[in-house]
Length: 332
Length: 289
Image (cartoon, rainbow over all chains, first blue to last red):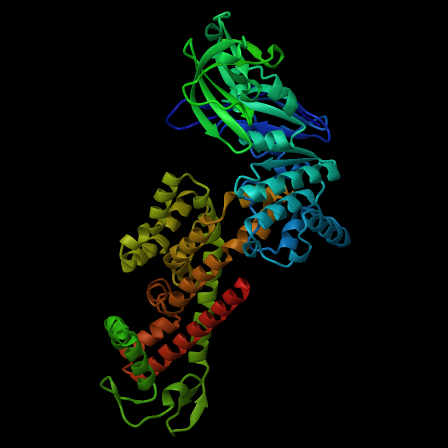
């Protein structure tokens, strides 16, 4: 659906060197998938989204949408609609007029516009709000109008720029599943930009993890969680222990990555062998889980998260253990 | 502090407004119903003569004869004020838009440039236009030099030069309020409109103009009211051949010594401006709904 080939983007600033927002990024986004660009702020994810929408032109490289090169096309000529972070609803128009705008601009017949507006508002569950002004709606409702407005013209791709960041936690969770449902119902390719890794894991078919203008890894949420190919990815997606090989008596040129939930901590007295020994330095009770911080004898620190767990106290000498299959080894 | 005492706090402001704004207005209205004193000022008895003068002339035998000359002056003044407002709007909107699209530093410079004429006395600036427009002036000189014309064009002392002077004087009052509304438009709205297949023309028609309209209305009021009463540009650039209402009022208090008629004219101008203002604010209220 979207083919991004060696795209670079730099912004010329007046007093400093040009800022390289994207370095030679190549990606393929498939038909009918929920794709997420995930990374911390300043990683280039929003720039990439704006390049797909057509608000910016790439410095080099090509972007193809449905097979045709869109480099020369302005946003109004691309079958791509955007849900903006700030929603960008037209304040002087009613909800229905906002949703109808894209269709009107395509010169759709009045009957079709009415039908699509009704459909779109139904889809986001705002049937009774057609006559309201955006200012009369709550943040969550405005967000759904923005989604309805972008979906009404039935674009081939829907771009979502941190659409949930302005909502409170509870609303955010609700909208996550709502967006997922909309993607499945409409069959439109969704491209989401977010810095929230939980959001990305919960919603996406595939994720591209980005950092400082580079795509570090592309894969399904499970693939990225289980097989991080990079220290940054391992650390950014969920929590990870990044242990120097030396601390475990292995190759010092390697880093061992283990998720906290995979680490079992048991008292030395139990006689388990394990990968290393240490002492419990802190215990955090998290309700269903307990988090143990263990300082290994060789100096490294790790976290273990366990359900219920053994009755350990701070200062207890412990053995840490995990199945070799769950650990990942990366070159330093 | 009780509610009675708060009146004391606004009393000085009310006093200033009362003495310097409300009282003169009532005085003007009162004078307009008096008889003219040939040595200036007004005397008894009270009469409607000043208002009758708009449409009738008192003949030697004291009979009233219809004479539209003053009414025509008023209509011409209103027409020129409306034309000034229209031209200022057409010129001011793109200028304001251009300034909004610049970087913040350039905006500051350009806004300063818009207000720059205020630093020079209006009289001097208007005289400069005479130097530019007269037969031996800069404009005709340049055209003759370029070989486009052989005889000077009559650029000065006509409705065109009056209009030019009025537009030149009042354009900043249109640019600034429009700029302040355009500046508040979220650029994402324009991106969103483009994203939803709107052409540049459609973006202007459907997004920019509706959001800029309050500023344009404010600007129109700020231009129309002073343009209607202005006498500097009409006198200097119109050559005083055809009177406008501003000059006419000024004359009544000076050379003509007909204060009641001058006061009546002022009252009429005030009523016209107030009517426009009321219509405008009604419209603005409707739009907000």
